[in-house]
Image (cartoon, rainbow, N blue to C red; front, side):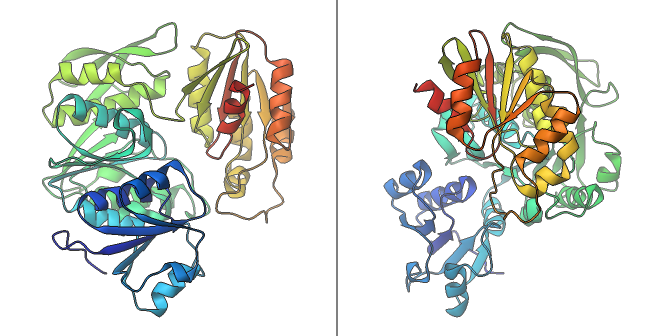
Length: 459
């Protein structure tokens, strides 16, 4: 594998430079004196930021984009083997790395690389950790899988030993990483277009835990089924948290304010007790916060600093994000695209002031919709009213005979009313006619469903 010498900056080309992670890595390399260029399908705020910082960005992917002086090409798992730029790199014997391999090499450039993994909650927990380190004036380098307003984007370049990043299991990309501290938030079935089953997924997380060195630390959710199978015979220290009193950290006395945001007593295994309050809703965020607190304690950050940071944390884009109000209807946007995430979001919404909950859901990928059809139906039925948009295909093609109408029928089988409209404009018109004052409207999904709420706010 090609190894980057960070003391000798080179010219690196990114295929898919506009992705949330790729753009962040490109920005870090620009700050380190590397020459950066790359391509994407269309312009975006992320590519515009890179251009302002000196990157050359091409729109549309073609072999002619690869200049003669490229030293290394980086690509994501979304890039197919027949991509013209990837083929051109191979024909000209230009070294290539995956995004994960590049990120792994970058982690080795820091004394304290921290990787946050799990099926759900990675972006929120990474952002909470970021807020704590910033409050502590630790000057970290941050790579977040969403837009985090306090740093003006998804990336922050610091000058300390700390490097914090999300660690995604899809295509086993996190197995290319070199963390000193690893966090496992949860493990569930997902990405079944790549993994065979839950056992295959658990095996990957076990391998991730084994990446930690003997002087490293694993922070793991003890509510994960048979979590000790994942920690057995690890050389590193293991810290546990979750709902059980037998773990190192667990919550008690969870209460909610008028906006559905929780406060809780954090119990320590040694009997110590502390109180924390959050400004983001939902019980699931209590556990995300506890993972961040466990890390802060490990880094010997004062509890008062951690508590202040968590109270100041206002969320990241597309995580129960308040977008505005229209005709007295509150509009929230959320990235949830897995049944567990949908359940957590809709349960959090119950503690939010409202009359009727409207959930406008855009399924993400045909395989995920097929694999979790019944689970999606049960989760979405937690909303008073459900509206479905067409499936967001992402990296897939429609070859399964699955559609949003299939999911609509599954929801209706549960005796729950469900609407389907093939276009955003039809959805928007229906909402304008049917939502009334004090209703709560949640646009939900990992695609472009956010546009529905944003369009309504402009009308």
